[in-house]
Structures are given as C-alpha cells and as structure tokens.
Amino acid sequence: MAEIDNSILDGQPQANGSEVKLKKLKAAPKKTASTSNKASAPKKSEVKPTNKGGKTAKKEPQEKEKRIKVQRSFPATTFENSLEIANAIQKFAAGQRVRRLTLFDYLGKSPDSGLSRQLITNSARYNLTTGGYQAEFIELTEEGKLVTSSEVSDSEKITAEFKLAIQSIKPFNSIYEQYKNSKLPSPNVIKDFLVDGGYLLNEVSECVDTFIVNAKYIGVLKLLSGTERLVPIESILEELSKNGHSVRVIEKSSDLVPTSNVANPVIVDLKSATTWDTTCFYITPIGEDGSEHRQHSDLFLESIVVPALQEFNLTVVRADQIGKPGMITSQIIEHIIKSKLVIADLSFHNPNVFYEIAIRHACRMPTVQIIRKSDRIPFDLTQIRTIQIDTSSIYSLVPQIEVYKSYIAVQVRSALANPESVDTPMSPFYSAIKEALG
Image 1 (cartoon, rainbow, N blue to C red):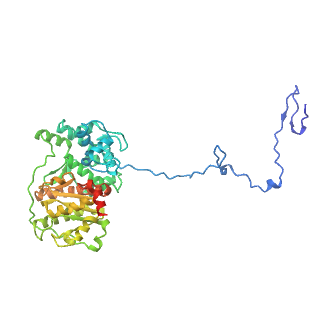
Image 2: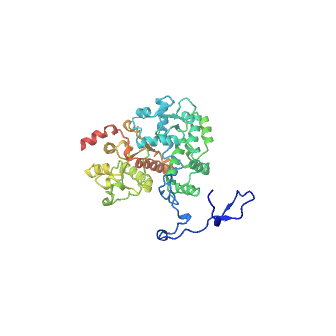
Image 3: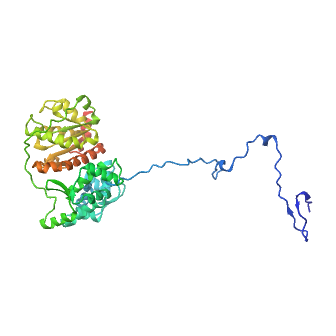
C-alpha cells in the first residue's frame, strides 16, 4: 500500500484504522510566465454563451423589435361590393361549396390577383363566406346563404344583411347604436366619436364612409322629413311587413331643372394641374354658360365631387378649364389618359362623355362613374358600379349630399388602392391594344 503524505491528513485515523479525512487543497497555483500574462478570468455575467458544438453563440439583442401587423377593425370595402363572391357561389354553384379556381374562372378573374384576394378577404370579413384566398374551396356561411338566396322572405334577407353589414362589425355597430333614432350628424362628428372610442385616427374617415354606404344599402339610413336619419332595424322590418316589398325598391324620379346658378367652379392653374399623380379629371356634360347642363355640372362639381376628394389631395380639372366647351382637344385626351383618377358623369347621356370614357376604359386606369338617378345607365356600362344621385328635387338632393360624398369617397379609395386591377369592358383586349400601341 502506498504511503499517504501526512500534510494532507485531517485528524487521526479511526479505531478501525481504515478511514481518514483528506484536507481540501486550497493553495493557489504557482505563477508562471505564461499564466501571469493572461487576462484575469471573466466574470460570470461576462462569459460568452456557447452552443452544443462548443462554438460561441451569437448574442441576441436584449429587446428585439417585433413587427406587429394590426388588423383593421372593419372590412376594406362596402357590404354591397363584397357580395360579388357570395352571389357568384349562389348563382354558379347553387349555393354549394365550390373550388376557388373554378369560381374565379367563372368570374373571368385571375384567382391570384390582388383584387381577387381582396374580394375573398372582404367577403370573409363580412362573414358571407368561409375559406381564404389560398384555400382550395370557398363556401357560403348560413347568413351568406340567406343573403343571396331568392327563396327566403325579404324580412329574413334584410335581417341577415343587417347582422353582417352593421351589427357584427364593431365600429359600425357603435355608430348605429350611438345615433339610432336620430338625425345623422356631420361625418366629422362621427369621426370624433370613433377617435374618442379608441379607433385609429387614420382609419376613421374610411370607416365612416363605409358605414354610411352600408346603412343606406340596408335601409336603416333613410331620408325622413328632409333629413337623413338612422332608424331601428325593427322599424324597417315592420314597414316591410306592412308594405309587402323590400325597402330598397327604387322609384323612377323626374329630372331636376335647376332654377339658379351656383358659384363658378374653381379655376385651376394648369401648370400645377399637369402633375398627373395629383390630378383628377372630371368628365361631364358642360354646355354653354347658363344652360341646364352647365348648372348641373357646376352643382355636382362644387357640392359633391370636389368635397368628396379633399382627403385624397387631388386637384379636380374640368374640360372647360383647358379648352373650349364641346371641343375634344389633344390636351383633353392627355388629361384622360394620364390623370391619376377620372370621375365621369353619365347624366344626360352626353356623346362627348361616352367618347372620353371609352378612351379611359381602354387605358384601364382608375375611374369612378356617377349619374342622375333619373337617367338610365347604358347597357354597356351596367357591369361597372355607377353611383346614382337623386336630383328629383332640392328636398331630396340637399339632405343626401353627405351620403353621396361618402359613396364617391368609398369608390375612389377602392380604385386608387388597386389601380393595376381596374376592370372595364375593354379589359379583355387591353394586352392587344397595349402591344399595338408599342
């Protein structure tokens, strides 16, 4: 047995002589040239972490910024616009589940375009359909079936529409409950109400416009006693049961012949107006000074079109500001094909208007159409959404001006958000035209 150094023994051996306690060595290692030059050992908190392979792991930032995508609190378009997918399923697939690619083939749209994705997304946001833009199948919800079916009563359909378009969308329902049974206040008042409720300032304008259009479509925003009022859905259903027809039946109205002139339209400095990204060209029947056409155009321009475009920072230019009325000059053509936006008034079925709008359609650029309610929308243009403005009397026009401004703002917002997806009667021939023009 090897000898044990007594210097490391702690205490005497036990009776049996077999157990000893060893003293712990605490002596520091001797300094050498190699060890004295080494840096002192790092503190525990400074030791670099290593991974399983023994390599130094990358130090993660203490507070890594995370990009959070905040979902908007309301759909990006109106309820009526969102019905396209649901109506197509009802008509093409008899309300049954259908393959997404087959459905868009029926609609004549690219299933992967931005516009098609928005159609599916907004349809789902209103709970009309289930299935996203990457899903294999798209299917109607139970409420979606009620809204699109021709075999349910009007009261069932309107109840379902109200639930989907107003009640189930939190900010819309908040506005409805706040102002129900009263006159609809100015849009700015409603915006303040939403901001006070915690909604984002940069979204409230669009939210208010979309709510107004939805409420008008459902029928809970009605012109009563010369003012727009929000009425309870129960009143609409009661009225429906008494009258036996839908509250959205459109009566044919007579023309309005203005009896007084309005202020002259704003004269635009054309040097600044030719900044095309900030230009809206207004295609409209103009006529001579003092004529019915001129009074009509001035009224729409100053009271509806210009105010509706304020938030978009667009300068509105009319043809008489760049040339002689009735003459379609090269300068006018340039405005038609280069302006960021065109608003076209189809009222009076003016031939110059149709000529100019055909050029714009061939360019497939953002366009919004309006018309007097008393004028028939030409057959070739019925596939394009056209805003009808009731000019049957001053008493029906003035109280609804704010509503019409909201209609235009909604359409403009949608058109400018997807300029590459503009759909016109000329769309199938666009590629050939573009190639021919070089």
